[in-house]
Length: 234
Image 1 (cartoon, rainbow, N blue to C red):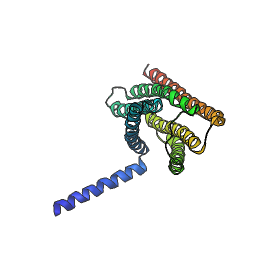
Image 2: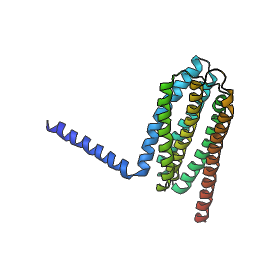
Image 3: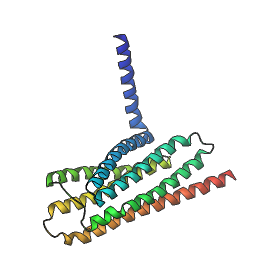
Image 4: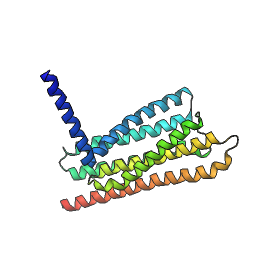
């Protein structure tokens, strides 16, 4: 009984430590949240990959590629951040990892081209009724609000890789808005939906441009930071 009581107290203590760290350590909260998002993204990648192969669907196949790139990007940032402490020059290692991550953002941008093109011409397969679509809308709204709030708070961290994780979450939310928009159009439109083409084209172009802009900004900041560290070393 005493052993069980001691173990129970240790478990409670760990939970309290985790909660306190979650509340007070912004970097810990961001990385832990990214790990949760990573697990969900892996599931989505496998699901869409299966549907792409089973139904020979270009849409699901392209979305699978997008999720795979998203997984690789998050994995790279999280693992690179862990390894930086063991490097001889952590500052340069962090800047290099940041630039490589920004290049991954360009790849993420390219992976969105095919699914976005399919959405623009309304060729995304939709097999849901209005109620699930509304639930999807509520979830996506929550996701974009939280991603926007966290994007504004990212300056609380001095770690550039942590800030980049928040930026990636915002990009993911933007892509979710596009999918939601197309789904709602297809669910609520009977017959010809060609009158919605201008809306989907403009919104899709805006998202692609936003991802591209964020990629360029990230690379520029990384290069400037590397040059700054090199000047300090001279």
